[in-house]
Image (cartoon, rainbow, N blue to C red; front, top):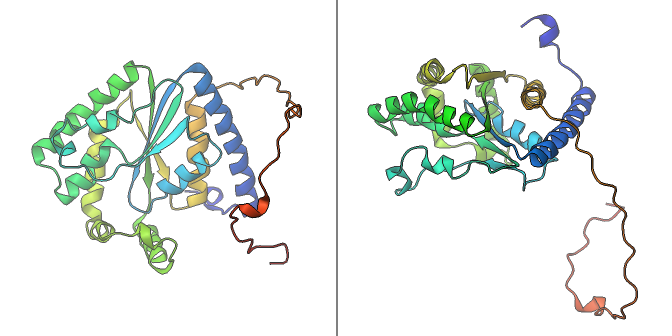
Length: 268
């Protein structure tokens, strides 16, 4: 990374550029809805790499009925007996929808492989099957985009320590994170092996350098917008109607209602 790329940009620039990109995301959302596109975006990477923060900024101005986040917990006993991809298929988008997977079917190639939650046969079957599964999605008309958030060893440790000190972030830390730190090399090997099988021409991985969180968010959102060709949607002109005053109605007394205490006043 050269000196220009490593240069920190100002908070003002970040907020202004993020606002611009979020405006573009709204335009893209409306295009997806109008054209009845199906969009899947996969977010993977090490713990504390910044996936969640990026997803949060993508979703901030979007309609949750059009764009939704899927973050599945560990499979139930029943789901463990299903075809591996089955529980992910249930969350795929219909026409006019965008689905953001905060971790995805690639759990099998990462945490399940490293932590021993799947057998060797299940793991190798996944690596063979995943490219075919993704090709089926593409052939069905689904737009599939895969992001890997890359964070250095030192930066991950710094973020873990920040989480431990911050009560608002402490919930993000789990015993699994401790084990992931201990198995850093195993996760690196698993990631490289996963890329060798699933970084294909028809469904490539896009690596987001994420040691700088703000830069990573802007780069990822800008790239996402460029991967989905969209146009401005013309909204019909809307004229607000006047309230109908022809019907007589006396509202119930205000003092009969229960109000939330007004603790925060202008003088607070």
